[in-house]
Image (cartoon, rainbow, N blue to C red; front, side, top):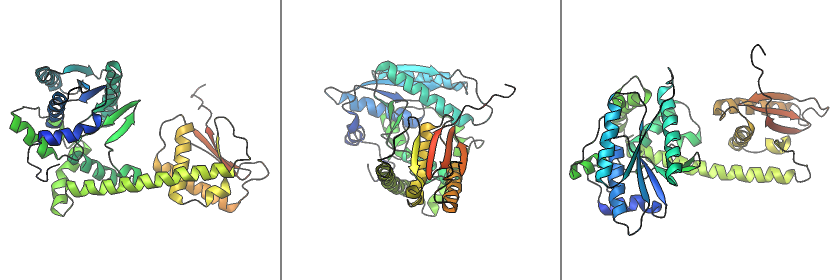
Length: 352
């Protein structure tokens, strides 16, 4: 992209942003009406028109039912989409709204509805308008929450969700450049006041970013850090893949059991701590039935497991488990020198 954060995006730059999506049969554009998503729609429409044969574009606006202005903004998005020759759909989040954790619940609902829309129109990708500024904010939020290496990698330009690829083509574009692009094109956009509502975490952190920038921690620097952490995270994932193969080779004479993952405890114990954490996390998430495990809880589990293995390397050779613990719907046990991970029995209902 241009080194000038306030310069409009040129047709050549737009073509480069969407180049990897040219072969897709159809794309869904997530457009709320704010400057970032309106710029995404305008740039994508211009890019599509430049192609002899490009993907079919469908614009989807999700009305969460949280603001009275949202319905009007959805109509404005539809009007502009039609002007650009694009299909438009408005989807509404009709579920009961939680009293706590509203932003996270709204985000989950949005992605679920977008994935449904993508499947309905045969789209392989959903495009969102996350920018460099969003990436910097995400890194700071996760840093303050004590996220691990994977979380500090922030958002990926491509990821999978509910069988649909999420694409973020504007992830290295500053918000100021998108606004400059819309102003040059004389395109209007909505202003969502919740983006400044300090009752929510992200707006509070957004207000702090100028102070970080004054100390050298501007969005470009923070995004560079996230990129480097993502690179390191990818390397550790390769190490974890290799460790899984190593453990399988150690177990080549052990008959596998359906629905259970099992490791030789002594071989597991010599692996680096971060790799052991990831192997446990993978197994618990694969076999548990209560959603993704929290990293902190997996760290606590690993500490207890390491202690049990060190105390008795053969780990309960008499058949009695040296450790038996549940996490995220998975049952983890240490017995006969082996670590076993299996689905935990369903919890009994109270009063049953």
